Image (cartoon, rainbow, N blue to C red; front, side, top):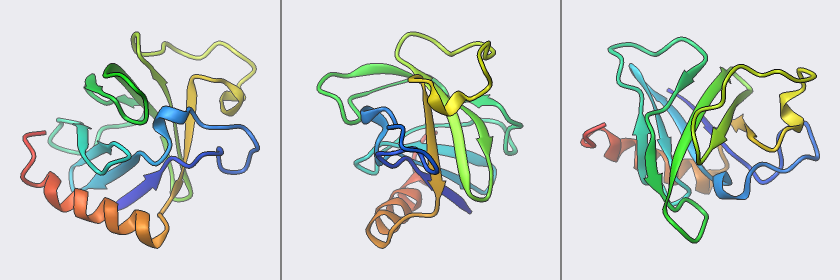
Length: 137
């Protein structure tokens, strides 16, 4: 099982991650990826019978995450490595192919997560992962 958490600041950078995604977790559980909100609730999971190839989109979901109102979330994972996972996000639709300077970490519509989690984060994520096995995703 691999896991990544989205911290306040993008790993290896002084650029901030989107505040609404801070403390969200992505877990690779057997044959799927699961996206957990900052409260440990699972919000979306891939549905293929095996782990999808990168890049992939999580199914659209409605949630507050760290914001004041419930919104639709379009989360794409473009990289999932041993140290970091990266991707894009939007509340209005999936992002298309990138057409920029190639430094996606500087863009406001991107997120970067670090592998593993601190003790408290790990406990929250593992408890949520255990509950995901009974989740309909």
